[in-house]
Image 1: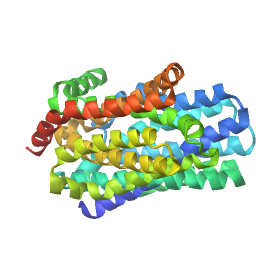
Image 2 (image 1 turned 90 degrees about the horizontal axis):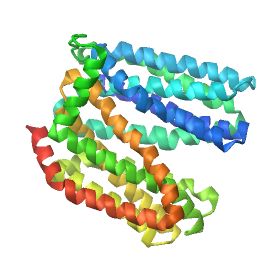
Image 3 (image 1 turned 30 degrees about the vertical axis):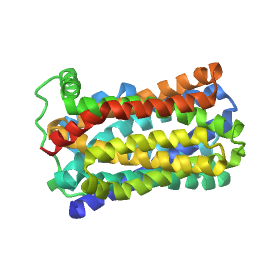
Image 4 (image 1 turned 45 degrees about the vertical axis):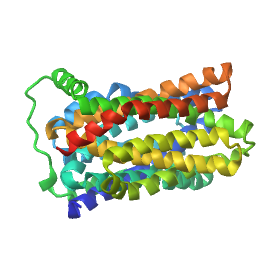
Length: 398
């Protein structure tokens, strides 16, 4: 599967995933500890999400014009230097809200470039026939780094000294910047150059996504499911505390269980796809995700809650592996950056909307009602999209 170039690209992805996991845990935690202000914590969370709405599409257009490896060197180097600057501010006690908001926004902004460039290299390094296995490896590495290793490292280092969290992040980004040139230049995608204006290329990429029946299915399904899972993840913590009686210290175990499910899915989805067909596995993954949500609400005991999150993680992981592979097959190499960015806009952009709707709906009804309605709607999405996904799988293979 891609040989040495793929393994080196995977090593870079693993390092930056750990860095993102540490940062995503330590930055909000430091904001909460240093300010004791919920509005400040919320503002930093918004600053981390905004680049995916404001920068991702222009970033994708630029990535389609520029060579990927130098783009990754610049993006990772920028993140390493900015995080080192944050280390100094935190260590000296000068990390005010302006610094925290700026770092949150700029680090995520650079990530939009790095993510698009990495996806382009992934397709070239893995080869079209091995995209399921390649995406499985990447999803697995990202899950371990962002959801397990990164948060655990951040928890240990934060108790010792908060600045060490950001020092580790800078070290991982620096390693990625030095390692990515070792990926062979032979996997560098061919770039057509800037024949259109930037705005024209963004429009071209967006139009391609909207006009391609297969990509419309993938992006539309991702958008709907992301909105619903965002609502469940937001309200599930309150549900676990009030309805299940979980102690606050055990609530994070739910997210570890989800990460474990995703990790298992990343290893077996390629085999399941070859055995039962990619479309069938994608449809089943949506039903598995809906089933996990339903278990959480219907079987109100802690063990069932942990199991439900494992099931949800497995369903989401299997879907992510196969939807990414199909999206990559349906996208011309010259437009990979723009299509990847548009995909991320839907995947990340609707999550805050789901989170924002969950609270008022739970207030009017109950947290359990939000979870059960979301589970039902995910199942409805699976039923409605099943014929389209089967056609998508055929088109991607052809």
